[in-house]
Amino acid sequence: MEPVLRFFEGQIGLEALVLVIIICAISWGVWKLAVTYTKKTSQVDNLPCDKHEKAIDNLAANIQNINVTLGKLEAGQESIYKMMSIMASSSPSSQLTQSHSPISLSAKGKEIAEILNFDNLLNDNWNNISSIINNETNPYDIQMEFISKFLTYPERYIDADSLDNIKNDAFMRGLPLIEYLRMLGIMARDKYFLTHNIDVNEVDKNDPEKKE
Image (cartoon, rainbow, N blue to C red; front, side, top):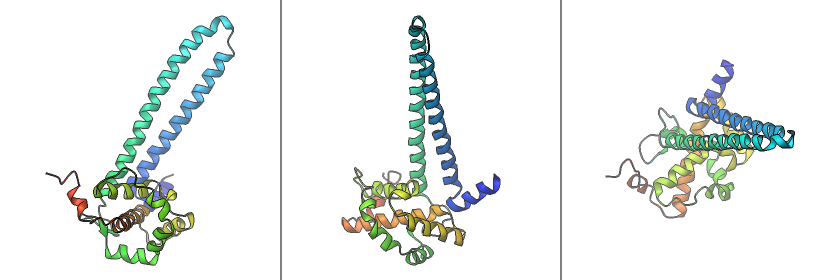
């Protein structure tokens, strides 16, 4: 088990690995609740009529408890997405992006982006990628949304072959996949800003941690 965990840690980074484990745990919890609900419903259906009323009352209470638990699980998923947003804004010891704000690619990041034709990748998938932005109104939120979505759901926005190529390159270079996905988010931000005449320096002006 440990070698498997170490392999995935090397591919996506420790932070993302932890989040994947949490998501799997939440998914298992939802499945378990669904099984419990089905089992209890079946038990009520098989009871004699004179015991239905009491059993239905108990089932209603159990359903209420399940709904409360599902609400907590949904809140947990929202927390995970917020954690991904935090990861999007910080890239400690990253070799491919620069930590100063606004976030940008490092020299090595630009080199890899050129080798993997990230510009063409973004152009070919731009209809999907541009759909990431919905109600975000300021440059900081737009930046965070692009990077967070690439970190969380890359398969929704780029084709499978390109994603496989990125994973292979990350593996060959011994770099976390999460660094490549952050690069894509930054480049998508730049393309969106260019299309909509948004100055990248406006990101800092709308950063809630930097506003006076």
